[in-house]
Every structure is written in C-alpha cells, then in structure tokens.
Image 1: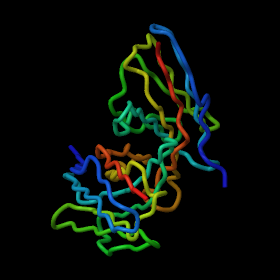
Image 2: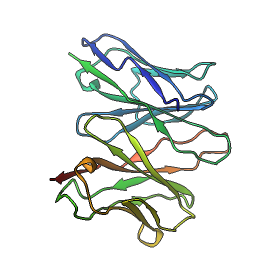
Image 3: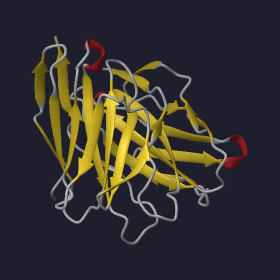
Length: 115
Length: 119
C-alpha cells in the first residue's frame, strides 16, 4: 500500500538559509499535518491543512509557512534557519471520508540539520 | 488545553517479561481520540492503536493490549512476553474532534517512554 512520501529525507543547511520540505499524502487523503521532533523530544504539532485550507495551527514559528496544493501535496517553507530548527520533521496524512477521525499515517520524516 | 503525561521516561526489562506503559491524559472535550505510536531506533512513527472516548472496551492484538479507563483518564499499554524487537520509544497521543468545518486537530503527544528489552 502507498504511504506518505517526504522529500528530501535528509537536508543540511547553514544558519540563516531557507529550506523547503515536501510531503505527498496517501492517495485520496485530504488532510495533511506537519510535526517537528527535536532530539530526544516528542513530536510537536506545527500546522495542518484540510482541502487546501489551513485547519489547525500549533507551535509553528513565524519564520515557517506551509501550504497545501491542488494535488493535496504540501510544502513546509522554513526561512532564516536557526540551529534550534535542527530536528526530524514529520508529515502525516488522513482522510476525512467515512469515519469522523481516521488515524494519521506518518511519513518517514525529513531530518534537517542546521550548521 | 489538552495534555498527555507519560510518567515513565525509561523502562528496562528482560526479554519475556510483561511490561505496562502508563498514559494519563487531560482534556476538556467529552469526545476525543487516544493513540499509541511506536518509534523504533530507525525513527519512523508506527501507528499501533486508536481509541475513541466512547469506547472503553479493552483491546488485545497479539502480545499487545490496551486498558482505557475514563474514570482515571488513563490509557495504558501492556506488552506481554516482551521481545527485543519491542525496544523503542512509545508515544501516547490525544486528539480532539475537528470542528464543523472538517479537517482535524493535530495530535498532542506525551514525552514518550523509552522501552529497553534486554536479551
């Protein structure tokens, strides 16, 4: 079965650079979520999109922005990168069809290292 | 505000022992969902179970079982006859129902319990 695809899997950037992470949800999933997991930490919810509209917002820094496109893929844009942005970034997707709340299927994550 | 507490930071047991991971949650909503995820050393998050707040029936899946008690706001996870491959960080998570506009809220995770199964 198709899973959530994230690219790139690894990314190394310098401080103050920008980074773009991409997420391709499971086919026919209409909701996408972004999470940030620092070293030894639990995943922290950043933002979610349902049918291309922002659905919920968590602890996303103002330097970050995200959007969901017409094909339901999503991109997380991160500017003015800081050392503290080094983390594993997960994308998850779910379907609103049928059950009220289906489980979120997580991608393999993008490991961002800021030097 | 919602909160998930996993008081056990790390548990170490010998293979074949039973082990229970505790999860206590707080939410103002009467309708919510609880989850358990496994994160092995490779880093991916593996879905284990979802339980809604109206279903307090305990669930068993092979060596895994879950005990949901609304009266104590707990959703504990037991692994029977543990194996080395069970070694991972286990996260308990909570989600409230989406609004009428659709979509869904992000998950609130606990800090995780690092489970070490020694051979």
